[in-house]
Length: 160
Image (tube, rainbow, N blue to C red):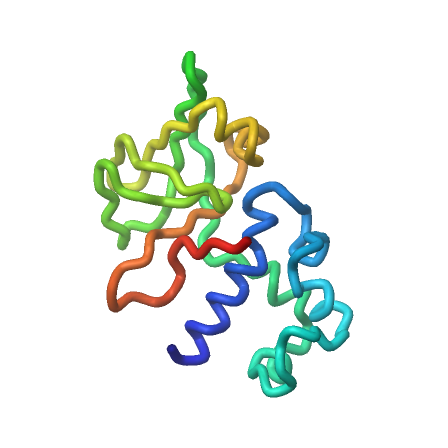
């Protein structure tokens, strides 16, 4: 793993609580090391030679970088949840029926797609446990593509 992969992986893991709706900022989540980094306090878990501690001057700015933000094109309420239609400019991405994609940190299954849009179903239980219940038409959401062998490390990494 090179430094670029390390930076992406650390930012991804630190922001899991934000994407899941458990905290507004990474440093607000009590089980995250982000608060120590933002305040410049040494984290007792990390060694002094952890490369990111020396190279990132502003952790708050680093943690708010978003790799892929897209727009919610439509919402359709269903008996057992909602159907989200997501518009993306990522024409380089090959979506597939039944493929995995995370929206705001929630892993979902693609139920339909076109060149620049994909659709996922979100069941009631997922709506009550995540921030996806607050998503509205034209809102910006974060998407994370699944990890593929040989690709950059930026898949659905779980913490806790």
